[in-house]
Amino acid sequence: MNLERLQYAWWNLYTRDLFLRGSEFLVRAFLGALAKFFLTGILGQLRHGC
Image (cartoon, rainbow, N blue to C red):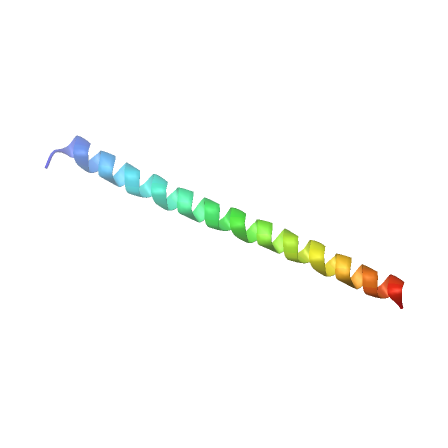
C-alpha cells in the first residue's frame, strides 16, 4: 500500500465525514427554523383569535 493511496483514502473519509456533519447541521437548522416559524404562527393566530 503506497502513501498516496492512503492519503487519498484518508482525505476521502475526512471530506465525507465533514460533508455529512455539515448536511446534518443544515437539516437541524432548517427544521429548527421551520418549527420556530410554525410555533410563532400558531401562537400568533391563537392570540389574535382569542
